[in-house]
Every structure is written in structure tokens, then in C-alpha cells.
Length: 144
Image (cartoon, rainbow, N blue to C red; front, side):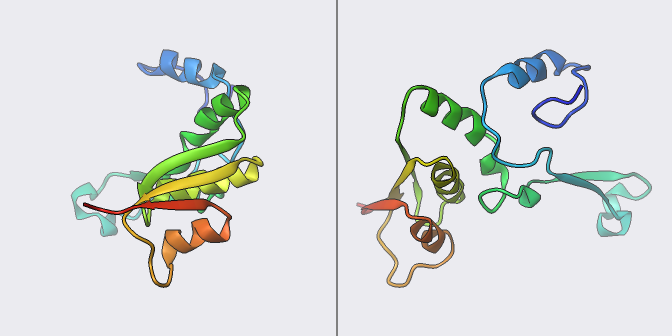
């Protein structure tokens, strides 16, 4: 059996928790699990002679990837079940969380609203630009 995390079975010390997680209401927002690969030992001298398994959250093909995407299928499923039409989140002007939440909200037809710490950039870049391009309504909270 493959669960929502892409893991096979529920054996081991975390098996019960993984089983409960697999049964929680959630939305499909990307391909899981993210890519994994054995990194060459030469790149990690302390692991010489041992395999180093690396989970690549940057390869999650939704919302520009990253570990911030992991909780959104659960949080947004609950919001939609309660009839939400808008998702409000807080973070820094360059927040990865705000970027991922905006992408998920837009994908699901929800209105994204970001309350950003700090002021607007003269010329938005990075995540600040991406959330605007995706249509987030951004409110700035000036630092004291």
C-alpha cells in the first residue's frame, strides 16, 4: 500500500502516525513523495563509504516547490470543507510560505491575501513579485 506521503506500508515506530495522516482529509496539490537520490560520497566526506539519501523538496512540482507545500493539502482541505473563499496568511515580504499558499489558493479558486511584514519594494523581486503575479492581495505592516 502507498500512503499520501508516497511511503509503502505503515511499519516502524511512526507507522501509526503515518496511518492516521493518510486517513486525514487532504487535497492533491502535487506529486509525492518528492524526488530522492543518493548523493555521491565525495560531496560529503563525513559520509564516505555510506550512502546519503537526500529528500528533494525543491522538486515538488507545485507552488515552486519547497517544504512549505507539505502542510497545504491538509490546511486548505479543512478551509474548503468549512466553506472558505479566501485564504489569509502572514509572512515576510519574501516569504516562501506566502508564495506556496498563494499558488495553492489560486489553484483551488480561493482568493489569496497576504499580510506582509515590512513595506513594499520599489521594484518587487523574488517571492514578492511572484505573489503579485499570481494575484494575491498584499497588505503591508510597517515595522515599528
